[in-house]
Length: 487
Image 1 (cartoon, rainbow, N blue to C red):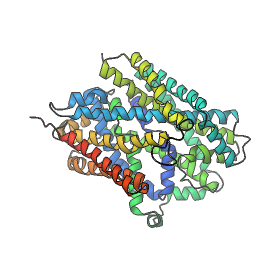
Image 2: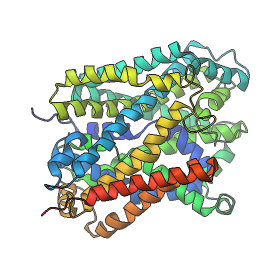
Image 3: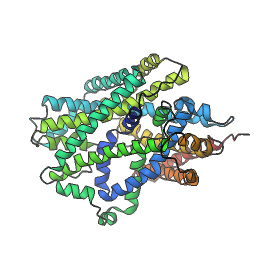
Image 4: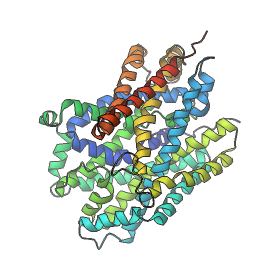
């Protein structure tokens, strides 16, 4: 069966950027900027985006384009005979399923909020207690969450069932266009709020006194980790889109365009949220509650708040759905590449599986709320997120980097040849040592620091156990990667 291709270059860029752009751009970037010093954080973030995340994205694109397959088959096709690379593909496969097990539910929350803002459900509320009660009522109802999460699952797989061009590309282009238009309008509205000047200054003017206050190491690590996670590299999401493109353009230029679009959305999300928070005397570092509890409380007090709130959650819905469509497409491709299923058969089987797989996350807020996998106050969603964000993403990224640089992997020569094929910006050939040594070291540091932050407060015994497990996982990647050299 001939591999499907994107209809246009802009379609490829919008779909790839849409997969990277998600709710993390909208709430996590402003929250991180608020916590780590505003403009100072942004400077380091842009630096690491260029030096770390974008090169890893090129690795994924190159593996996908050269093999013409998803992660399910790309390592099998490109690995030297006798090596163990193909067994590492299961990291990417598991990551995509686990991500959608909780991300589909969060997308359902966003759509639910957009609908209720449009219906005027928030109009009669006067304080944060009522807004918080709305969120609590939503999450405590398993039926409500099931209905809306299944709606997300069915709509996402339905779009993908229409094919690459007529489903994935067409819908992502439409949603990305709508997302950008709504985002710019909302940012303009926030910038001109009374009292927003302090937020704009915090966001754009570097205040290096924040370095001493927050700590340079914390700012650097925060910027490094956010730049790494924002593009969702490591799970084969970019590899699948690489398999759908032709060889007319070099991959470095495409990766920079997609990184730039992703960054533009993150920066504009900050313009929407941070000035509004400063205008109402609210700290913009509230994390997940910022979207579902803090911001709605701001909107209900604004002139035309119902309209602004509706537009904001429609914007979030588009951001969430572009990611969902991209990852669902990756999941569908697994069935097509591994088992030779048709697109429709893979869609039906995976859609049915996902309706079951989302249930633990849904029930974790109500029926199974007593299950706290990561300690008191945690939920099943927190555990799923930890597995993906703190384990499968960094470990998967490590696999792609090592595969493209190691002598017993695909190798630097093959990687550079594929990355530089076509017109446009070339990947720096002299970056071999940097990619071979520095990038794996940075990824390892991010990975281990994530475990450190998660378990340092759990007591010395649990901390030692979990850090040992983390190190063993890391060693498994390195040992498997270098085992079975080509004769």
